[in-house]
Amino acid sequence: MKLAFVLYKYFPFGGLQRDFMRIALECQKRGHAIRVYTPIWEGEVPPGFDVRVAPVKALFNHRRNEKFSAWLAADLARDPVDRVIGFNKMPGLDVYYAADGCFEDKAQTLRNPVYRRWGRYKHFADYERAVFAPGSKTEVLMISEVQQPLFIKHYHTPIERFHLLPPGIAQDRRAPANAAEIRADFRREFELADDDLLLVQIGSGFKTKGLDRSLKALAALPRALRKRTRLIAIGQDDPRPFLLQVKALGLSDQVQILKGRSDIPRFLLGADLLIHPAYNENTGTVLLEAVVAGLPVLVTDVCGYAHYIAEADAGRVVPSPFEQDAFNRMLAQMLEDDAARAAWSRNGLAFADTADLYSMPQHAADVILQERP
Image (cartoon, rainbow, N blue to C red; front, side, top):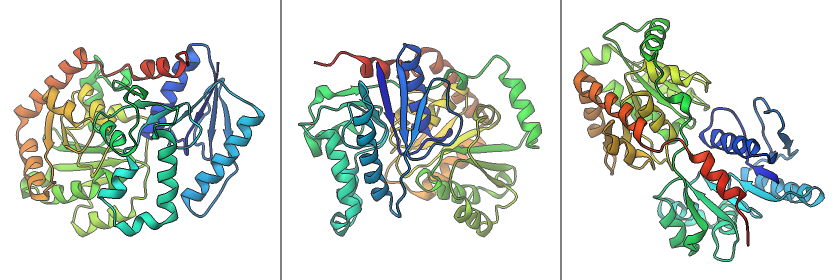
């Protein structure tokens, strides 16, 4: 089969992008030809992939998306494929991987009514409707149980078109046999003393991921605890607004903000706590990556995968509505309680051995490749 995978941007460090890559490689492993359409490709091209970068530019994202859709349709008309798999909402998809939540629900509950008069709203609403409308034939790969009822509420999408996938944590995120050695080397490299505490926050989109909340919580720690606590944030985003906040809070010696990188497992093994106070998050793959590495997690309950932290007893979940003072207290308590962190770590490692946290690419490929009526 010839398969066309479509996404608005590929770079090696995004969660959606990593999911796309693993699903595409799984389909390729099963003997199918892989073509990729995108306006932006950063990084290496896997052997055998036919990557077609669309020459489209526009001042606004929604205009760029529309130009890309037209270019894509024309190219597919000239050179057809058997299936089109999209990782962003758009018309013409046979399969959609639902990495993003329900746009219409956010537009109605989080935005001013005036927003729905703008061209940007109409574009994204139309593209979402093209996927989820009752008359659409698009099969939907769901990675968040929380979002499925919202799509059904707004679009009356037939339930049989949804396919709920298990998480897809890469096996290299699991703590290896020499985890203690990797941790010791990491902490030497970053000049962390035995009693120093390292927080990590990992994920592109610092604003959505709540980096501002993390910085406030670090600044609010009791003085002695704050003095021996550091935070490293990693992601593809503009760090400047947060570096200004770091300076204003007097945390310049304790905070590093790094670009996306490929050695994340070292950070998960070398840290003492993953902090993830996101404002919204469809899933949060890094939460499970931390669990299987034995790293305790502090996360807001709005994240789709936050329930795994509670089920595994591998950290603490911050309830909604979010209160900064309560979050500050939870962080301090977790950092002060060495025994609890050790127990959360053991619980996470045990959960990694028993729960199905790894088979998402295989299940996604099954749906993509299944016979159509």
